[in-house]
Image 1 (cartoon, helix red, strand yellow):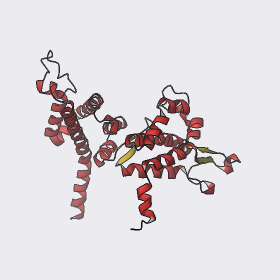
Image 2 (cartoon, helix red, strand yellow):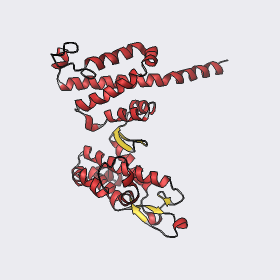
Image 3 (cartoon, helix red, strand yellow):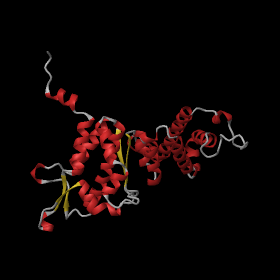
Image 4 (cartoon, helix red, strand yellow):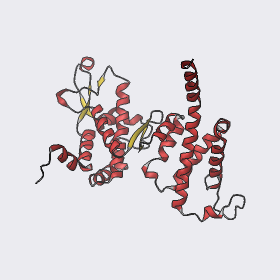
Length: 295
């Protein structure tokens, strides 16, 4: 009989269910935040859930009509997400992390704005800190090639595929465009032609505003992107035979999976266009550097 070492046992038994228990415990039951004793002359600690409920939730842009954290979690059916995640649903596991990560950003932003009053990185008695919670979430996401993208202006954290191209294009774009870039790559949009089409239109309109810039860099790329936007039922209704100016039979009869595949290709071309525009100055800088050091 082959002996199994502790590390093999850990790898075999450290399931999604185990991680769900950890994350829910750190979110709702473990004290991760405390006040600064020297300022407050008393020690008060909170769970992430408690702190957000008491100090952050009412000001959150994305709470919609929810009156408190309990109402919010009930509305999104947190308990059901938790159950499915414990049953090894990867999608629900990632959704759970997305929920906790949004709360994490709310709390840490509040603490960061008052660093002389609060502490979230050094707790007594060996308690898990908020920074350690983030490390655990990031490690879990990494196992599924996912990443947490945070948009401060929108106060939104979106968990999406960890793609170098997506990250680079998002970083090179304005916040309102960056969030659309990340949203398109979100796992829950797979198969959702309508939402993907809306995002592509937004990204296409953004590129149209920079038409001269991208055309000077790669005219063929811009032409292909524009052609796809105009002929794949994105900017115009290309599926209505009564609209003879725009109707394309091939598009109207195209299977949804095939159309979605073309949408995904178009998305990649748009990312390429954004990155090519972003690289213009970088190429100039490198060219100047090479000329300077080679003299």
